[in-house]
Length: 224
Image 1: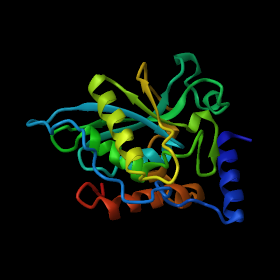
Image 2: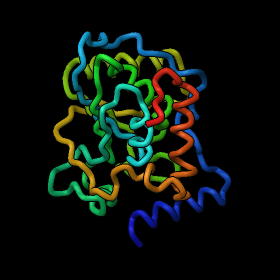
Image 3: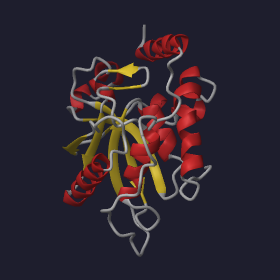
Image 4: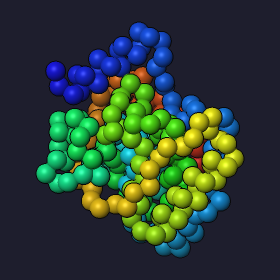
């Protein structure tokens, strides 16, 4: 059975158990606040990159493709080596890779901290250890792969802020790891949610995240 089929089967079992989680951030006890420490918005258009991981990359990509200021969102792998950056191999959970998302954004329209706010409140549940919804394994862990000291500082401060305010009912387990490399995933994984809207996995796990984004962040949502 292919890994996609296994993922679908796991989702159906969860549905039968009546325990499907239709939106990320369901563990939040209160609204996720804006980061107290963040970069300033740039005065001119440009491109910067953020890389995060938090469960199946289909849903993470779907969310950030609808965020104002995001130029592109690419699904891929980070945390392991180039020779193991392949879906079936990553799916063993033994490569060190996490299913990740490379987000290219315009810093004059959105900040790194605002992207992290969406990551923590909409895109996934940062209190789940090595899993998200029906997907289990280290390849689904929550990670921020920081690209420089400023990103590291903003992420560290934000996690501390959320923990201190007890925004979530459980501790945040998101790892902070320096980005060594990002490897784009296979073509059939790109834009998967957009091209497979009727897929039951997408309908029950990922489409609600985009709707959550639209409701919670109307000023940052784009219907593109």
